Amino acid sequence: MSSDGGPWRLYVVLYGETEWPTFRWDRPGPVPTPKERRAVLAALGYEPVPGAVWSWSEDIRDVDDDGSPVLLIADVTVREVVEA
Image (tube, rainbow, N blue to C red; front, side, top):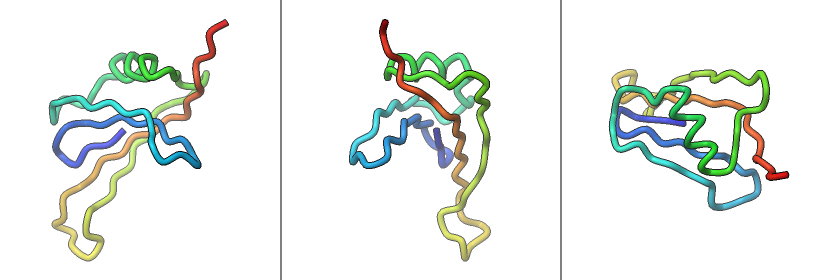
């Protein structure tokens, strides 16, 4: 999940794939709640693995400019939901 001050985007990284499941909240804030994130993951067919917690980091667009906009990034390990 990420935002650069605009809308929040949640995406499931699928290694080796060119297209990933994604969702966009059309709001810059507040940060989507854990409940909202779980609901979106479920709608995309995924869930956090048991015991997984969200971790947060930040990046900037231009590493040579400390005034560059900050990109907030959150991640959690997920698994595909398999219907029994």
